[in-house]
Length: 432
Image (cartoon, rainbow, N blue to C red):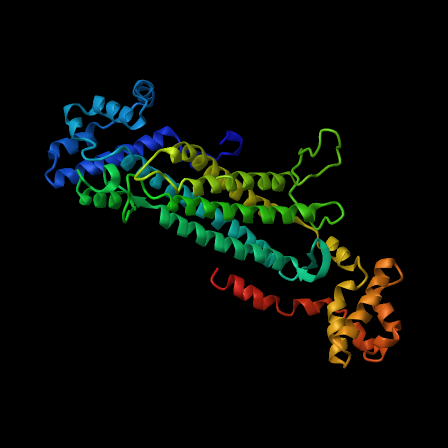
């Protein structure tokens, strides 16, 4: 991922320094287990911990000749450890190192992403409570539907990102597995207790059964979870973009002093951060299909998944980390315009109360079909500009037979739509 969309902590997970450090730990822990089993001298295991080092430039130089990254690493490690290095990697295969390391990196990434979601949840909760009772129009198909509150809008996103957090926790648990099982995964030349020791030391679970690689359905589930979270990021971003449109302007991104919206039009205040988040969500979701395709490897192992993962894992995790961090900031600093919300509520001259009138007419004895026709007939007149909805209903003879003017007027009290806000908030934030 390019530096523009990278945050240091997440980017560091995918740098060579971290990768080789994990490789060294895997080999050193394996040596400890081998020594405890009497397979190698204890002095050899101690030597790996004491003198084990690596030089990235040297590893790269060796790999240019060997064309094998793990062998290049082991060769460089031996240059530091000395003669005892002959006991390193006993009974292991490259995938034992690569896949176990990948599991560690993905769990590290998941921990950051979970923390990112926690910060976003904190921001959403605070703003939802702030605007809990701020009336605004709800929209279906982009058209004014019925009143809701801006707090409820934000509460829906809070609930969604709570589910996102749960998905990330599940994905982390599923991906956090260790395989030190040797060629084709049957422990032909290594004791399963080595795997158990390494897994414990690295905070991983033992893979139930592997081939020469950890099964890629685990990775597919991990990146699918990231893709769903990214889609939630986009949904909230699109809501903000729509609310910032000039014709709506119920909310907008914070516009900093000195910020410029357009090189040509000085008046512009564009939702650039939310648009950026929409784009980043596409990057994250782009990893899902390759991850699914990586599941079907040949027999006990091939490396068709390797190049894909080297690209998609850093890009997807770094992009999602950046997106979640940015989105939390957008929510925290979002500028909200309750007056514009009120103005938009009134824009359709009472049409947002059409369902209340429909239901009242049916309860007063009118058939639903006739009630619908009467309400729609008057509503269409409002759309044509013939008057306001309440006034037209008061003048309609069919409506007047069932509802007097006072009863009609009471149906236009927008507080009706706030009756159960507290109930919903208790559900959403009960254990928050």
